[in-house]
Amino acid sequence: MSEIQDVAIIQIREVRHRISEQHGHDPQRVINYYLELQRRFAKRLLPDNNIGATEINHSVAAVTNSTPSLLTLKAAG
Image 1 (cartoon, one colour):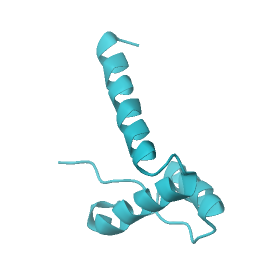
Image 2: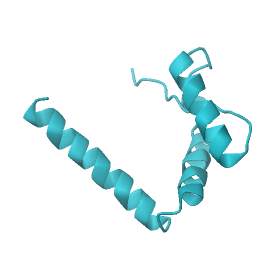
Image 3: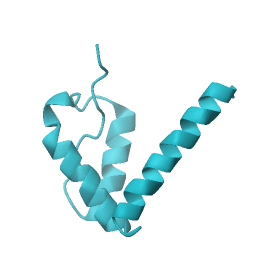
Image 4: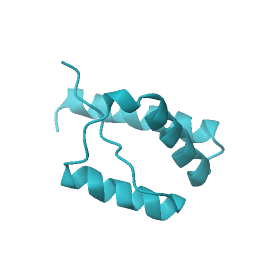
């Protein structure tokens, strides 16, 4: 991995940690936060035709006891 990629990964982990910290490191609260973002930005989502996204959705559904929903964001462009 290049140094630029390492820096990007470190920054992403720091942001994820801050988000988790803001929600008391409670997995349910963090998931609810991301689900709310998903609802707010629903128009930016791709249709559910991605196997990876479907696998993620089922994992989230299992944790939250909710209906699976798409977490994949549309690429800018």
